[in-house]
Image 1 (tube, rainbow, N blue to C red):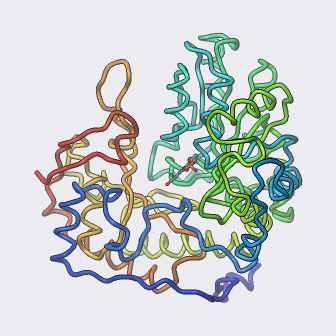
Image 2 (image 1 turned 120 degrees about the vertical axis):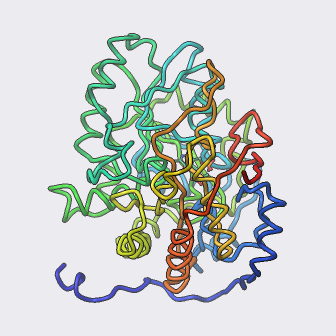
Image 3 (image 1 turned 180 degrees about the horizontal axis):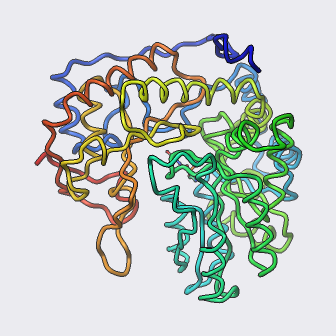
Length: 461
Ligand code: F0G
């Protein structure tokens, strides 16, 4: 351990195939971002230099995964790759039943439809955009029960993904357990900054939920990264393998929705995993309507094979050490430069605190959206807004939600960028920080009805 601290680490892979990047001039970028309505989601990827928009589906697959792609069994029914994936999910996550879906939101749609009846509540450790929308579309109301520390960018609680058990219990008392469809547990919590939940808290949530006959649905999208943080930070887990920690974590839930596009090192894929046979039967039936037959769920056989192989690779300690180590490297350099970021440094991304970056901009001038646009203008780096635009509107009052966290996410695709790319990123953030006082904010000129952050358009004030 001490040895690791003194010596540098390096990526546990070497590069076999490369993809050239385009460099652009400031003049070009001014044109491109204007055409994109100052929304980084609307930029063309060819006009982006370092793409830190998301870690979703942007991973580099291994030679072993690519080899698996050649073994795709593209039968409509009963594909071999489905059985391989099912076996790997059972072995690593520990759930009994598997329903593949094209990506995470496909699984969210299924579970929301099956378990939520109109008028029910769905508590969760902070919202995620697609998860909450599916809950709302099914007639549910999301209730945030994460600990208060999670809403404070400066707070260094090691498990900011924890549920506040008092908040959860008060909700049960207030609305009654039969009005609670289930509780969603994000591991890690994306919108809080990639922050983990502790094993102790997960266990306590499960106990309280079971006592009240409430199901626990885990969002396992980045659960391996969560397992890594438990190993590093929670007493009693230092010597346990990631695989054992992951399995224990999942054992405190009844089902999991999964976006394989993150942890599992693929470009597309997801699943719903369950222990309850009746819910599984319904999901297996419903998947035919929305995704495809229950042995492919909207995926090609080859995609299921790549995901099955990804499960094993992603669970390696070396991989997680390098993956989270890269994020940590960028975070620590930014901290040394005095840049305001969410602390502690999370698993998949660095979150710049736009409120501290631009204290002179009110939230209705979209500080995080503005910062993402400024970064692109400076260097062609693409980041993502995770603030008031992502939070959307309250369906009752029609007003914006005003999240405490107004963030810009620099998200790191797995196994894609080098340390030099990281250095360029740090230098660009520093440059934008130096020029922060000149910035005036944005005005929204087009707002879509659902998940507005993807397609909204803006103009400089
Ligand atoms: N849950 C979490 C925690 C996520 O981060 C995402 C996706 C999903 C569910 C939905 O999965 O995209 O496969 O349908 N997050 C991406 C991101 C979009 O950039 O953070 P999906």
